[in-house]
Amino acid sequence: MIIVPLGEAKDNLSKLVDDAAAGQTITIAKHGRAMARLVPIGRPTGKRIGAMKGILQLPDDFDAPLSDAVLDDFEGSRS
Image (cartoon, rainbow, N blue to C red):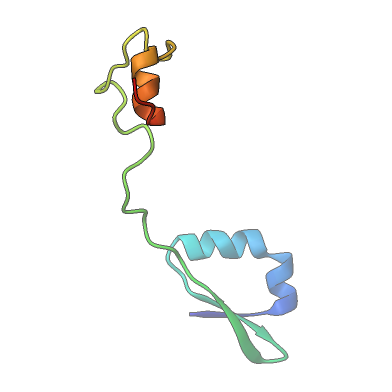
């Protein structure tokens, strides 16, 4: 764990963020007292956007206007 004074943290924030991303835990102190902690975040566990690229295919008329019957179904209209 690294302890960094607040003034130094302001001047070197980008480097401290890189250090935290590399796995370091950085404590930021003000007047010798710990005030905040900069820690690495875990790797995202969710699927990445675009993960289905090349697997799903959209039909050419995917954005064509809906028929009146389909619109009635969506809107709850009775024929």
